Image 1 (spheres, helix red, strand yellow):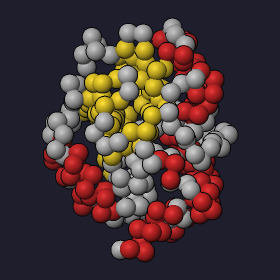
Image 2: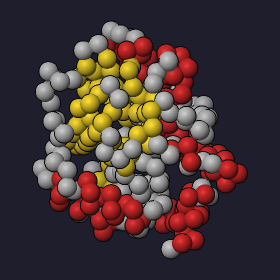
Image 3: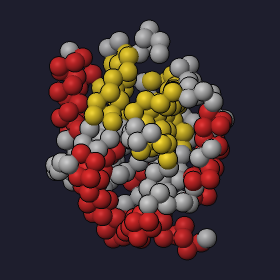
Image 4: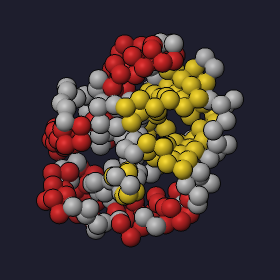
Length: 262
């Protein structure tokens, strides 16, 4: 990547990999990670970058799951960090069913961390993000006009991805993940029709580098074939146990409405 534009840093969080995009005098955070990933970011910036989290001008949140939306509120409380996310992101955990889904997702986050890394830490976080900036599809990022936000529903209804056209760089959040050496779709894919549309749309973007929240940096030769090859995986279960767990992931009001109208 052209370091004249920015320097990319990776921080391993509780569950996900976090990315700090360092410009001269300001930093963009790609996803806030889990609750105490805010402390990991603080330590990394102090020790490796020689600066304070106060230089984070904007923290992005791709969706409301605990390993993506948990750390940003703590950064805002400690450093007044501005948060940007999908304009309707706070609809995801609305109402009683949304509150129940929030509890389940937090517990599943703990389970994932224990299975992958053998650790547990406090991960409770607010179920409403209250972003300072509410992003719409195709919008440039506040303070970072070289980046664009795109709606990418499928995993949840309010996922977003973030794209840097000049570098042909795409932060995908949980749109795709890497398990071992395989690129797969996330579990759960709650909106398969919308996931199909999202993958087809991403296939049209000129992309050479993918930043995965689960899997690190992936270089690709052809975005069209990369995303198109994932289409047969939509609606499939990577493990038999996932099919059993899916009802626990379908409590959110929007999921119930989607299934009811299908």
